[in-house]
Amino acid sequence: MPERIGVIGTGAIGITVGLHLAESGVEVVFFTRNQRRARDVEREGLRLIVDHRHYHVYPAVMPLAEAKGGDLDGVILAVKAYDTARVAEVAPDALLDLPWLSLQNGLHHWAPLLERLDVERFTLAATSMAAFRVLPNTVRQTAMGTTVLGPHTPGTDTAVASFWARLLQDAGFPTVLVQDVWPYLWRKLLLNAVVNPVTALARVPNRGVVDVPDLRELARDLLREAYPVVASRLLPEWDLDHLWEDLLNLLAETGENRSSMFQDLQYGRPTESPWITGVLLDEAAREGIHLVRHETLQRLLEGLQVWQQVEGVHAR
Image 1: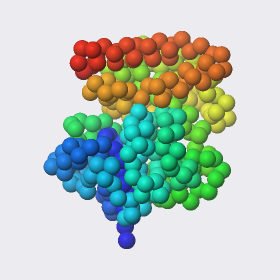
Image 2: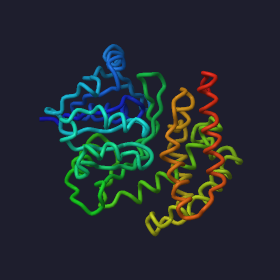
Image 3: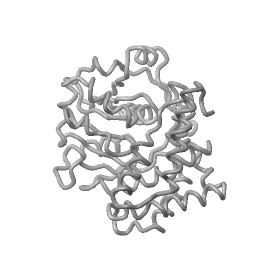
Image 4: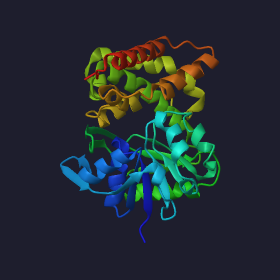
């Protein structure tokens, strides 16, 4: 029998992963934050655009609070970092007995969830797959990327993580299973702390950071400034030059993508900056390092979000 997987979240990553899994033969159930969103998905379906291919699916969908876990084999967490606490609050107990996979940005937002979920059931992933929402129910995928995943606790049994690696590989996602995923999570946080604020504030797709000399230089300065804060958490071979090349390759691979932070500002949503740049600034403060550029971008983002809330406008 095919696996049956629940996907929490109908945003860019949730739709991308869910529809690829469905295409590979997995039965997918989407869980939404409320009944209104569930009805919208039931009525309109979900669409994924990949190159010139279009997938249009009318999936099983229900509010998360009404989820039944007995017939599922696992749960993929694909909501924004700031929504994780809400998921931890409303997810039925039956779901917490299953294997979980997080495909989220940022760090340190899982604490409320891990108060209810056994950490041995929790797999973390650092992914460079890229997609952005075109319409409320339509997503354009711009890169398959590579997904590196492993158990939350390094060195523990990888059986649960292996289950997720096989599912993603069968769905066409280049996937690597590791014993310790944390260096990859810190690497992603570092690169996100460069790309996301720059693209969000400049309102450019990822390729803009490469194509515009001033933005390219700013990105290099941001990477150079933050590197000492996370260097000890990375793999030894990831020196500053290596990471700069990685960043340029990422921007080239996902050139047409709009970063998640750019999309959040565009649609008047909160950003995940507290769990990306905020985590970086907290680590820097603990080490007595002052990240002037990152702190400035953080203040600009926070100020822009306050202005959007007050004025009721979007940063289109």
